[in-house]
Image (cartoon, rainbow, N blue to C red):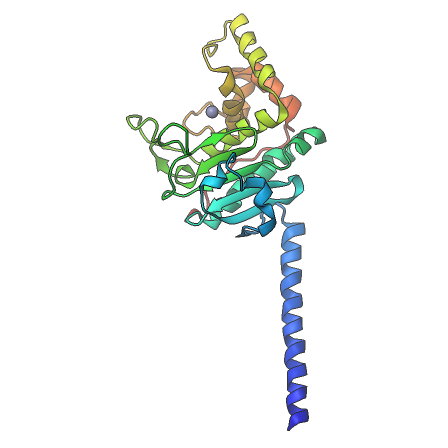
Amino acid sequence: MGVKFSNNSKLLFTLVALVVGVLVATVASADSDDLEGGVVVGVPDNLGNIYNHSATVAYHYDVEKYVLVEDFDIHIFGTGGVSDWVMLGAHEMAFNVVDSMLDEQDQDEMAGSYILILSEDDPSIPNAAPGLKNAGSYEWMVMAEELVCATAADTLYADVEPKWRAWNTPLHEFGHLVEFRLGLGQDMKDIYDGRIAESLQFAGGMPGEIFAWTTQAWFNDTLERSDGFRSNLQEQDYLASQYFSTIFDEENDWKPSCDGRP
Ligand SMILES: [Zn+2]
């Protein structure tokens, strides 16, 4: 009896080991073969140095979800109400934008930055304009899931007609993050001055928004305007278009998807 029990235990142990082996192999292949996918997990304990101090925006929220853009060391955090779908979409966005950078040094500059995703139930960003839940800085960008692939009203401009937003707000804020990390502010001021010198019709735009707006168009996600796509950029805004082609690979033609939104 004792011997038989022991054999069964051994068999059980072997089966458990096999199952664990299969699970490990599955996770490993998801990491290495499917870089655009990522895996959403709980927040690892050792990430406190990235977000858990009062100077960072994530400190003010109860972050529960995490996905790493492994190739570029970009960290994506989400609060409890955020869907895995939007976590993985943000992963795809960040991976794609940085992967298309022509200069490896530019890619390296993105390391250590993070994206915080908020749900509809989360409060707006502390010490910012009331209602603000989308923003970009040197260290982080914040995006609200409710503005992704939804007909949404902007809480800052409640009287403006709601628009279908796809991924354009996240791309805009990620553009701000890229501009800060790569130190492109002066170049944008030069483009702004160039527009004025050329008497271009959009000369009145804000220099601090040129890069973020152009990011939306470059990655084909300015949906509220039929002309706001990369194919039109050369003609519509050749100064910014030429500049972007020195930073990003033109072969990259990512159009964000809204498939699968919960
Ligand atoms: Zn902006």
